[in-house]
Length: 129
Image (cartoon, rainbow, N blue to C red; front, side, top):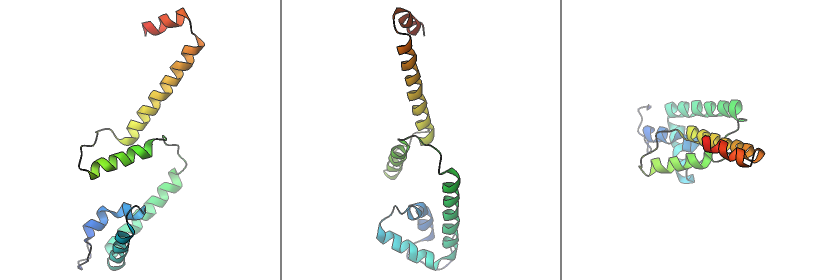
């Protein structure tokens, strides 16, 4: 995508880092360069507006869902891996977090049932499992 006019910052670079700009996760100097580009380039401004609208819609529709508490740190870890050019695990961060949450819940259920039926009979049941 490009308007055909020469820009100090290339359209592809702007679009590659659009979410960093939208999320206010880039240094102020780069934000200023992005704003200059968006002021000059209507196709990039249109894409920015579309992504901004999608982000607002997702926030409005999905902003109340519970997410695993450690999901943010896992996502940031994946971003760091990608930026460092390292291999990224095949499993999605959300899938991994859900799996770990399910494991914790299973362990909690097992601990509850173990404390409810302690003694020799409970020991033989867990040995058989």
